[in-house]
Length: 421
Image (spheres, rainbow, N blue to C red):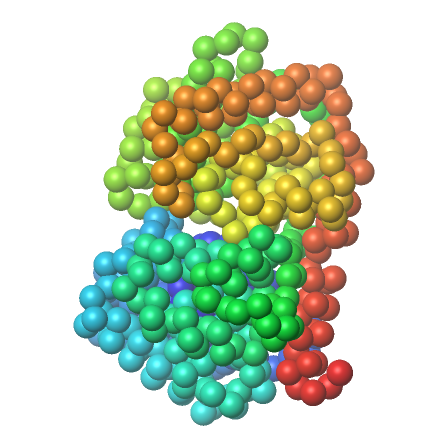
């Protein structure tokens, strides 16, 4: 179960991959999700559509089947499609939202009679699911964005806290996220908390994300790739600024590929900013996972200059495809990757700037952040020209973070909940 659209975000991709793995393992499953009214069911190639239900939000396609009279509420305030911010929810909007989900949750439970409910995001719908199904074991997966919504949409948090604390299991991406969940939802220091929270880490689809047989580094134009929303909190402005400065140096023959979509003023501002070097910056929009993997294999360097992420598994996907990677040194990520796979010159981190909010840097810290980013790009381009590359690292990443091993961790939890230990 997920409250927003599958495929468009990391949590949506996680839902899709988990559904595929569950199907391979022989689990009967029913998927509930949100989407704009009138859109084609996105799960048609994965699961029998009679085992899916969508909550239909306002759209321009079909107002007659709307369950909610406003656009899909996104777990991030800047989504890659038209959306509603939870921080803008009034009491009336909250009531309409919960009523729509409650109706569909009840219908799904009555028809399918699940042994376990697995809900993504420690937020409103997961909390509602606990209230409606007090006897059914429920797992909640934290993707980090709910922790941010507890701050941005604080008027809603009282509905969330107690029910989230009453979940049977909560899965998180890292030890640092575990501590953040404990703090945000006011868990105490009991053993029950430690037994309930499981650190699973991120996972990637190794059937899609794998390195090329041979990668021709240092030849011709060096392609730099970014994947994510076109928004300020992802650091895209700073990335384009650093890229434009590098373009002024004739010794760098580079292109920038921007994969992902955005909405509104932030997207328009980013497109306008890139127009100054439009022959070198290419907007590819939202692409499927197979196409993304091919783009990684064709690229030399992946950059994620984001100021806030859950685990940013896209960095693992890029490394698995043989792409070098640079990202902001966000909490828990470097430690988790290094612990699993060790250090590698294929991957580097730039220091977080001083922040004025959870995903917004202080203005005076931005120039130094851009400088650090630019210098790190120059260093990687130099290594690329020398054809220096850790050829073992892609498969180390794939072995440690592949879905096969990751799903076994979920199986352990499912067995506990089904009393099959």
